[in-house]
Image (cartoon, rainbow, N blue to C red):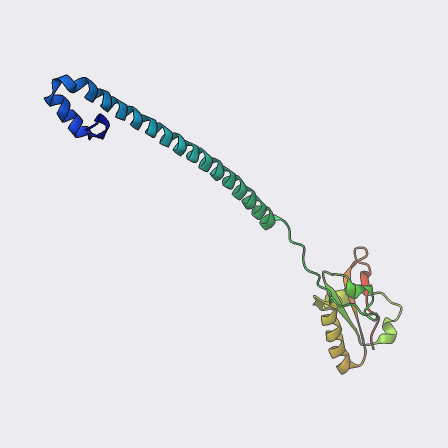
Length: 178
């Protein structure tokens, strides 16, 4: 039997019982130990390379997730533009006010159309005027009020006082409807 065919235990036992063969038996054990050290070195180098590659991959993923988290935080904290509150559908009779997004439409009811002709809207009329989110809602309100009273109404947007204690000015309005 060749030296490399023996198990570790049989080599130790053989060297202990036959003193003249201690040298070749210990050399065979050293050769096996050197082979095991080389195998361990190859395995540990491979595992080290794998761990370094995994560390780089985890670092790249962490940076990517941090960027995504930053974008989500920015999207959450950035101001949101409100959706248009106009009717959304513009027809020729609606004019430019229907196509524009607005903050607030106001409805003005005129029981005496003759007395209102040529006059601006007063502060009392502005205070009494109901507000609507859309031109369509204001027109529907005016049609309902007008069907009972048979007078007139007007819908206006972005109404404010021209000066303190003065008349009211509106950005845009519909014609007075009878």
